[in-house]
Amino acid sequence: EVPEGLSVLTNGLLNSPAFPKVARIQGLWQHWQNVGVPPMTALAHILSDTQKPTALPAAGNQEGLPMEVRRALHAICVHTPHYGTRSAAIVSISDTGPVEYLYADGAPSKVPFKDVTSALQTAFNGQCG
Figure 1: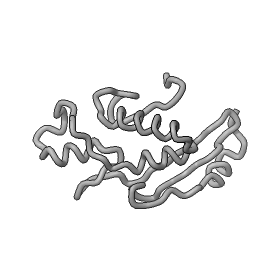
Figure 2: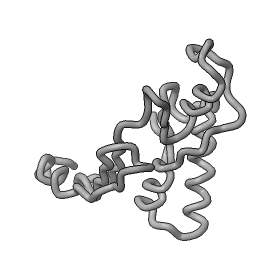
Figure 3: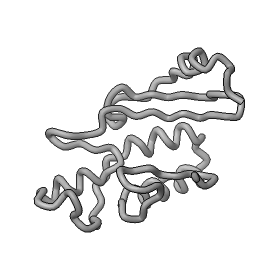
Figure 4: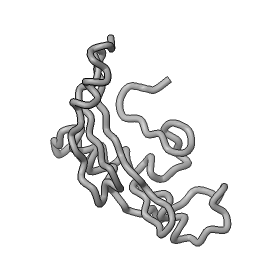
């Protein structure tokens, strides 16, 4: 079950405190809400964030990787020489179907989000509800 409000799904459990990016996303969300940025714009800024955390969880399946690579893997938008964020999507849905759909065809820190709402609305064709 997904709680009301902002939830973060990483490669772990929903809203997992084991992933530094969960707290980073929640903090950035609160910041953008406090300054009055519209939610979809706030989410675009958040998904573009490349800040690497200083504190990391236990190595887990990243054991043996250099510390700088491990830090990069825990950023919101990941950049390493051989691995990283490929694209991003932000979808707002109501009881009647899609409201807004933004898509970045590449790392959102490098490629801007485009409004592709019409494609999603066409696909749903009013079949939600």
